[in-house]
Amino acid sequence: MAPKAIIAPSILSADFGNLGAECSKTMDQGADWLHVDIMDGHFVPNITFGAPVVAKIRPHVDAPTASFGRGTFDCHMMIAEPKRWVNEFKAAGCNLYCFHYEAAFSTAAETPSAASELRTSPRELVRYVHDQGLLAGVAIKPATPADVLYELLDSADPKERPDMVLVMTVEPGFGGQKFMASELPKVQALRARYPDINIEVDGGLGPGTIDQAADAGANVIVAGSAVFGAKDPSEVIARLREAVDGKNGKL
Ligand SMILES: O=C(CO)[C@@H](O)[C@H](O)COP(=O)(O)O
Image (tube, rainbow, N blue to C red; front, top):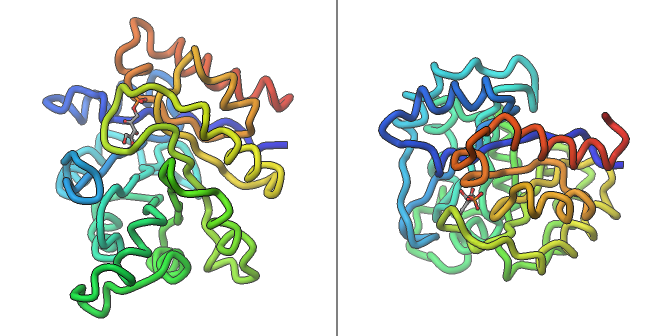
């Protein structure tokens, strides 16, 4: 049975001119976490913001008092060289550092000019993120199969096991895209093999698509435009939660 629902609105769809207030309002509307999309214009064809902005919004949301707790800043690092920024984002108030499997790998294999301390692998990077005292997430793009994650999730060493996996249900880079149901078999396979892990889905989630994602076994739900564009965001957040927890008998 999947773990409880965690609803993480993506602040990519918030009003950037009023970000602190937008974040605290969304928490008051029932969010568990905030999903903070970091894009570098390199790993993905869009740029958002960096650690200084995260540090500015952190005081607007109470920090979590436990791992995975309310107020977790779930930083989705759509960036090259993800090892470079772990400490800066930790200092800014990030709690969960979710890097892309593809980016961690390419630093080692495809960027031979990268400084040697930045050359890494997904396994080493999960360990490194844990060593810095953060939760570690590993994200996969639509072109990446789920089974690349098995080696990490099967690791006997908890330091090398991700705390969450993120299955992208759109190509990373932009909010407001169409949900790709073609990615759900990955979620099903991961849930069948790992009944207790946090599986996050991101992209095109909302009242019209949540049931498919919940049926597949996702429990951490990112929603940007569906929450920030709603007349009643509280109602949308409650609906997302009900779909996941209702299915799992947790309501
Ligand atoms: O990471 C991303 C996009 O790359 C997402 O977090 C989007 O921000 C989700 O937006 P919606 O599809 O829910 O509008």
